[in-house]
Image (cartoon, rainbow, N blue to C red):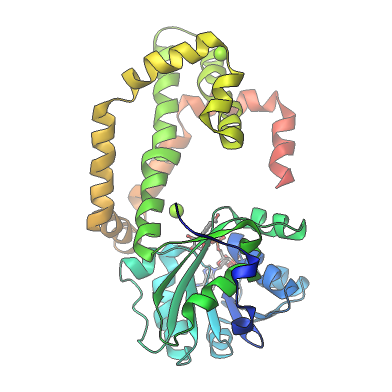
Length: 336
Ligand code: NDP
Ligand code: MG
Ligand code: MG
């Protein structure tokens, strides 16, 4: 089992008196900036001229500068803009202003692992990646808790990078919940695999196939939606709270029996082989190459076409109609 680090394991002194530049003020950016500030760290937010986020950061009492000026003023630069924009911003604004002996940090390993960003040898490079979206990182912190993080040291130029990464994790509240060490390679590959094979790609395709199977057999789409999509959240919430065992305790014995006998007929050894193929494409860099090309040369044409096509699926149309009958679902959205 992995070692878990908590507040008492942190050498907070390595962050004392240091200035942290938070580049980007979106989901993660606002949470990191505000939590660090509340912990007494000197924070400056780096944004481009005309950024929509600048007013929000200023209203929260944060200093806002250009990315170049924020990096020049910083001992630690945390890069929290969308992954596909990071390499360009690094080249034009971050790299020319990075001080030797300072640290460059990320919340996801993609650009370092796939060498889209190659930092100079005289800076520390670390990752602190919260295992939750930014609004949860902020909300739990305000409530006195935290979201668990994973952290990694890619390059230790100063000899203190491990301590610095842990101190940063404490600064955003992560060590209140516990943080686990990983590597840029492990975090990047497992993150991409999880979202592609299971969390996003796998689950969406599973639901879509289930919905289509019922509709093609002549059942009403509204009923198909309830049975293959709407109830997913109830099931996942139970698994999230207490493992598959809690979910299985809560469903009927009939449902549990069907779970054991039919699950492996649907998600088969062939699906597992497909998962291994997906993982191989991630490990070889083929997926990263494809996605970077889509962003650069392709102007995202294929990506945007797929987005449009999926949004037009009957499942989405019937879902929108049914969700309008359940206004409390929209209220739940607002809560976070
Ligand atoms: P967001 O998409 O929320 O970040 C958008 C922010 O970046 C906005 O403030 C935007 O400004 C700003 N921005 C965009 N382009 C530039 C630019 N050229 N220069 C300066 N600022 C810019 O990102 P996330 O918070 O989702 O992701 C940040 C990092 O965190 C990524 O590496 C991601 O993988 C990682 N991560 C994200 C998680 C999540 O739940 N979202 C979870 C864990 C890690 P404007 O408002 O003007 O557009
Ligand atoms: Mg991801
Ligand atoms: Mg049922």
